[in-house]
Length: 152
Image (cartoon, rainbow, N blue to C red):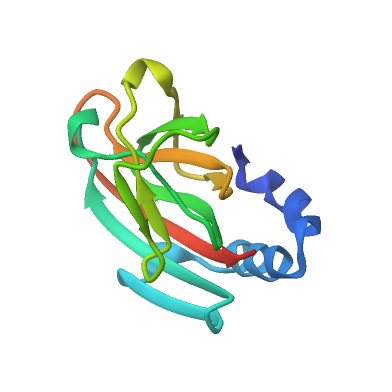
């Protein structure tokens, strides 16, 4: 997991050619005007999903992980809290779904670390990361976020 401000995102282009393309795209677009939906960047290797939703309590969001894609999540508006833990063999509650590239977990909130993302900040989750997205900080609020899926 990596997190910082968008002004620091360029440092992570060196991870792979797909990351370089994804980051160039992320830094060149104004996602505030994008409608929610999926936007191709490089076929199924790299694509963006613009989301808009209300954040929710811990009890309504299950921790998850991916195997084939990394997520570059960029906050456009609103504030979102994330739970995080390294994937170290925790048992899947919902087995891995290859089509959706996701497995879900039941993890005690005390076993997760939490951080908050504000507009102009990003977070990258790798397949070695469990993350619990869409959490509110103090009360539910509308967020707009882009998730760039990067094939590894």
